[in-house]
Structures are given as structure tokens and as C-alpha cells.
Image (cartoon, rainbow, N blue to C red; front, side, top):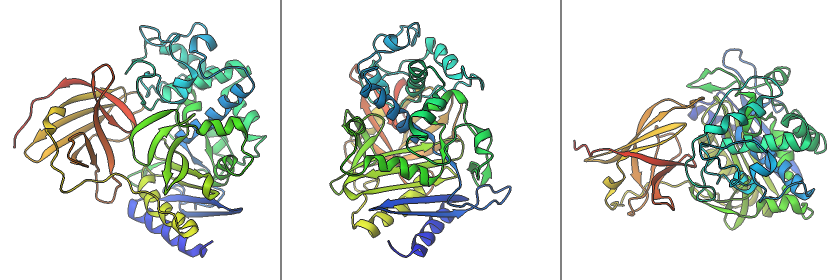
Length: 445
């Protein structure tokens, strides 16, 4: 391992530049574990970040939920082709009721077509997930099941309810019995009252603490795990070595292509799949209310690396720290994110002008003499972020692939225009399909 101080300084520098109050870097490589903390957990209290601090890992939780489903498949209690109506009789999905069409495979690969950002708070009772699922009778449908990849929190809450029905208990209890205890994962919690007795991070935005601390209990299976870097490394290590159980190995089979997903090109059973210099990478990210996280597992390098932050800036921190850590340990170069091509002259970009919308966001794409811009308006039950307008810069001459960012210190975010199989134009942003709602006129300036 490199001198510990070099990664301390690297993490500190990345956090200071991105305005991140606190973070933890966790690394497992060839039998050696390193955990590097930085800063404070809460700018109101000044409590120092340590290696034992717990952070919300957000949607990385989905890989934990998928692992339980893989256990059910191994036990013969369901198949990937089991439908929602098979497993949850009486549950309706949308006005046209897709329960007989949506399968476990669709849910695990984000291809159900259900609007993915339903964040309904159904209370704190043990029936929170059941009540959430009962409310999906009028959920919007973005595309037909199996037609496309579009990141779907809603689908993972459905999977959480399937777990509850099959195990006869709450999703949280199944998580404890099936993963936390048998895998000896330390300091794993899902509810605020569990986190408050630990050294817990508070979320921040613009350097200020944000509230509420957590997301609704109904969303547990989609994103409510709170834990340490050490536990996240221990979880990831289950996919390393020569004796990975077949049901876990099958989770990493590429099942569906992911369009323009940064360093991701396919999805398995929740795991997002890519390559670093020819080495297969399993990964996932997570974001809650002012906390973000990244996890990568690289079996061929015997490597697990994670970054936990108490700000929205995990990508900025990750993109500075993780490539250097991986290079230090293995000599492998981590691919860069998509970036603009200064020489690209895009083909007829004005054809994309219009309003694209899904439940959590409205995207107004406009054209002027300088090119395309997009106004991003968060909406929905649990709007994350604030409205902003950013310039779209082309990645190539196709006129379909762009990137944007709010500040020069941020990583580039991809925006890709394409057409769904039924002919509907769509804007793929934040790993989600946003269908065209209406056209807008070009405005010349």
C-alpha cells in the first residue's frame, strides 16, 4: 500500500475543492484494508469523521436487495420470469395494470417501464412497503416492460414487498437475517433511531445541513441502508476470489445494455457493469438527501473501493481520488467520464428542442445561436436538487450525445437523445428515460 498520508491528502484536497464537509474512502486490495476519513460529519455540531462513521449509501442498497432475491432464486422460491401478479396477487400496476407483464427480471434490471421516482411516504409502520405498493394502481408507465433501461426506484420497492411476502416479515428483518448477520456486516442500519446511536453523518447541500435526515421507510429496499465503509467493503468482497457462489456470480451476468452510462455499459441483477482496462467492474452509486456514495468491485484485481460523502459531490470526490488509488495499487487506468469534443459540429441539434418529462424532473431543451441548453426542473414527491439551466456541449457530430455541468469543478453529466422502440423521442438523463412531452420553438439570440 502507498503511504497512508498520500491518500489522506488526496481525499482532503478533493473534498475541499468540492465543498464536501466529510467523507470516508474505503479500500480492500489483496487481503489488506485501508479506511481513510476526512472532515466533519455535521457542520452544525463539528463532530469529526472517523472510520467508524455511518453514512447513507442510498441506491447501493439495491445490490443488497438483489442479493436477497438471488437467494430466493437459488432456493427455488421464484424465478426471474415470475411476474408481479404471480408473487403479489391483487397488486395493480398503472391504469392498464401491467402486473401480469412485469417480471422479477424487469424489476432487477430497471426495465419494467414503471415511472421510477415514486417517493410516497406511507408512514413509519411495518406496513409502509405494503401500503406503498398498494398505491401503484395509478403509477405512470414510461415505456412497455422490457423495452428499455430506465433507472427505477419504484421497481425495487416492489422487490422489497416480494421479499416481505416470501419471508413473512419486514424487508428490514429479512435484510438482517439473510445478509447482515450471516455475512457479519458491522453497523448496518436503516432507520434514523438506529443511526442516531452511532457516529452518523448528516447530509449537506451548499455546505449547509439539509433536512429531513432520511428518506421515507417505504423506500427501504431501494435506498435506506446506512453503514460504514468497512461494512460496504465486506459486502463487496463477497464477489471476490475463486469460490464465489453461483447465485452471486449470476448476479453479474450482463442482462441489458445501459445507454451512455458513464463507465457503465450493462446491468446485471442490480449491479451496474463496466470495464477498467479490460477488467470487469461491478459498481453502484447512491444518493439521498445530501449524502452520496460510490462502490466498485473489481474481481480481476482483487479490489473493492468505496467513497462515502455527506454532500451531493461524490462524483467530484470520486473522480479525483479513485483513479489515483487504483493506479497506485494496480497500475490500471480508470476510464474518464464522457467529455465534450471542442471540434464537433453536431448534426441538426434543433430537432431535439422540446419538453421531456418524467415524474421527478421536467427538462426543457431550447436552441439559440450558441447551440442547445436545458432547463432542469426537479418535481415529484421528493425533489432532489434545485432548478438550473445548463449548456449542452456535444460529444461528437451525431447531434445526439451531449454533456453538461453546473460548475467547472464538477464532472460532466451525459445527456443522450434517442428514440424508444415505439418511436417516441426521449432524453436519457441521470440513467432514466424522459419521453418527449411537447415541442418548443427555436429561440434565436
